[in-house]
Image (cartoon, rainbow over all chains, first blue to last red; front, side, top):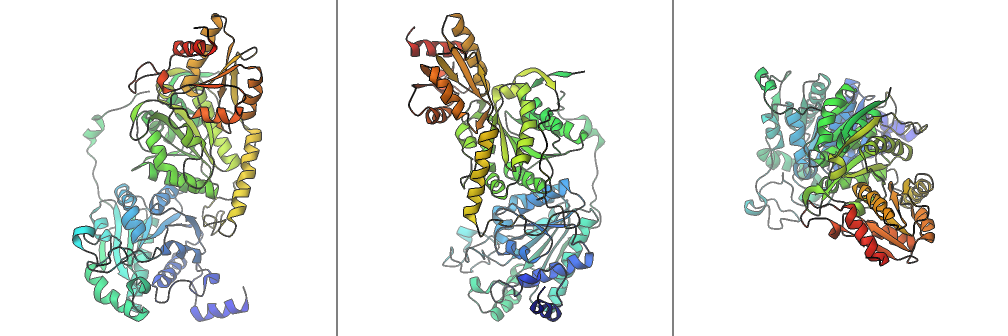
Length: 273
Length: 357
């Protein structure tokens, strides 16, 4: 560790699980991912899970975020990080498995896997970054794009007839029996940042307690693709994004209640070898 | 005492997985593969392994990838359309050098095709299957016994060379029952899995899975070519049958090779000098073996239940020095998907070819 790095550590008060050589933060000015990154690092430190955390990283800006964490990371194809994390957790139940993906990864191409881990109640944690569009590929419409929002593939603004209505993944998660925790947070003010950190911590805790699937949706500013300054993009989260995507906990249970009908064991087809 | 059982090819695949110490199976039902899933749903947990029926083949192979990254011996099984769905992750595993075993119980294609037997996946699996110019080892089983043995060998090869190994069968092999000696096969020592990710507490380290060759793509392809060369030198497997004085050489794999064996016997009864070369590794292909055998041959007849895929590798091996004939899917006894190629039809083709008809 060089002298410069030491200074950075003192100034930033860096979480242990955050890699110094990723500083300064390598994303666009005003991007909220730096805050998600820090929050993840802080939670990993607080829960002392650095040694058993395994991150599955989707494709997109959110996936690159992982490079800045010290924990083991698995590179995944676009949309598949949820399934990969479920696979890791099945064979390594003692690991704390989480996946990070954006609204393209988890809301579009990989949404099927997300619904299925909820259905199976796979005890993994999903960090879902919602910035109302595709970041890395340069601002195309996402399932979460706001109605009317101009994107490179909805040049006249997102219209209902062609592109439908914004996807509310956290609300869907809350309707699924297998979900232990679902919440939507933002990081656009210090108070919201603290709430986001708490939500991530609770989500990991659900996994550690073996309750079931947990998901934290984080609203993130994307100044370049919104065509806004960092400051204006921050306000846009408050004024527009939260309007469509209300913050809050949609589900938080310590035990998933269910019943079995013993009669059903005597019905159905059995294959005998 | 030998454990001898009457097993379908699909059940034998399942036994091969258990004897090969497979500890995780992820798959999705598809005819004619489903018995593998059903067998392992019951048997794998008893052997201390994890079984999961996933939402699709994409999830199945993603979970194979994730669980293999932890160092677990893991596999999936599917049939032709499922192989297509898996290709993106197979390509990723080739790039990241992650071992995996994938069974393809080939059904009739292209498209959704039909669930009956065929060999229409040859080109797809032997040439890699997905994007990026990689290769996978392909083992072709022609009996229930081989299903059991080759799955074990596939796990060894996958760990030895850190790559995907396909075990290719077909609906006929998958559904036919034969006696199998359930025997654990030992193929020798394997390198330590020093690349696995199991969290910092155990072993591993950040970045393992994240674009290891980002700054040297040329190096990646050079490394892989070196590995492919090593595999081609060391791992080619084939069976030659009644080849001693053969003037006509049949080339066939999978269920068709069983029919071809019958054809060799029938033709020999009639005084025709016919032998069979059955490649067991379809990649690496026994190119040199075929080239040497062809020195004594007047004719080569490729028999395959497809439009002519294996024949491309045979032609490539022989470089025009011996005439290569093809009896393809038109040799089946019916024109719908329930047809198969019988020995008598192969003998008929041989006779036409050598002019004794």
